Image (cartoon, rainbow, N blue to C red):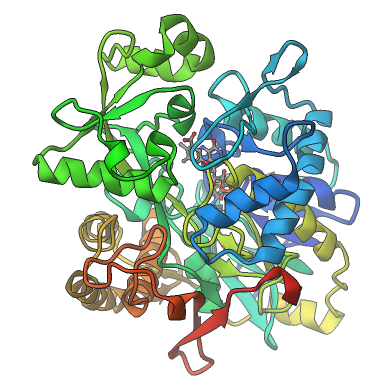
Length: 542
Ligand code: FAD
Ligand code: SIN
């Protein structure tokens, strides 16, 4: 890679073949599969490991014979997705899943074993045990470690830490790279690339309470929208039913796998209640369990329900969930003896930057994958432990498509270096907290039309504070992206006048057949918001 100083704009310019934004599993796995095709810049705004991937607990859902099949995994994914999954995408996820998990193992990932075979855990809405896991409950750490170890030995991959991607460079309707901020030196740096991948993860920081690390500020959604990319299914935010109800951000997650091993939910009066909500009780789809816990909390005017670990027995809980038990002990909770207070919190964004089945967006040379993207696999509610799998399967597919991208023409390259846009979009950093409070109150687990309309009006006002500046702090960049993404999420949620999966509205509590479609948002060339629908794809159309 070749750093130069463009004399006119005084912006350091780095020419690479591929720019990858984000170093979670989606970014690193794509980088790994692009190795050998030219110089790759992995741009990441914190240290390389900081990502949701690093904190994943439960594991990776994968159907391996003899007890399971991709078809069974597909059926469970479709059922949990509440009618909004695109079947061709789900078929790819479940059929290509076993291969990528084997590949991850070949790169050195060590998953837990029993009697010499991979140990499969159970999580909600899966018909069978199919969750591979590492060190009991530290799967994400093992996945991230493995991918990073592999990537860092690739001579053509350079990782730019503390570098925040801020704006895409668009010339003649094509993406020719990304304008970024070197946060440690406080200056702009421009990556010019033949293909750019957005892999910036989730949106948890848009909510007052979330399991996500603070880097999850929806940057990819903001950046992509400003550049004209289509976004889809933004109204579908998954709330995890069992975060520890204790002070601090993020909220500490207590994996669904704990319920998969037999732990019971108790309401604030210490009574079991899930049988009143769903025949699968504790292992009902995540949206059902999160709403049930929330409803019990609200009706008892309590800020928590309970998770009772004792059905597992002390030995099993310590052996299977060593990290969770240790963390609980450190925080003064003793699950061996008494139920632990839990609460639902924001966890995962089902929607995102719309792509095809190879991560291609509607902007030539721009790709997206992982949690910030959607290819239609998760529908209205993601099946547990399908997200790491999604990053692996679609990261590899994105890499295959990116490898085919032609070099920029010399004239395009010169134009990219001299691109007139020298600034970045920013908003006042204190807006971040106000957005998180508003989203929690009005665009949360249970929504109303009035609340969504109020949220939209307020977010619209705040969006007027987003402006182009010659320089910005990380907090100011994040505030702009959070403000942008939050507004779009409120608009999408108000637009969908039904309840489905994770999107629940008291004014439209039923699921409506006519809403079995995706909501797509995009900015027109004139800067107006375009709202359209896209049909859900069935397998026969593929
Ligand atoms: P991430 O892993 O979040 O990575 C995003 C990267 O982008 C980070 O490196 C971030 O710093 C970087 N970034 C963001 N914005 C910018 C910017 N502007 N410029 C540069 N870099 C940027 N899923 C499962 O399948 N199984 C589980 O067991 C599981 N457990 C979970 C537990 C927790 C606590 C959490 C939070 C999530 C869990 N999930 C699980 C979900 C899953 O971990 C994530 O959906 C998945 O890891 C997302 O991967 P990703 O690569 O898309 O994003
Ligand atoms: C968990 O371990 O409960 C999280 C799993 C997931 O988000 O898929």
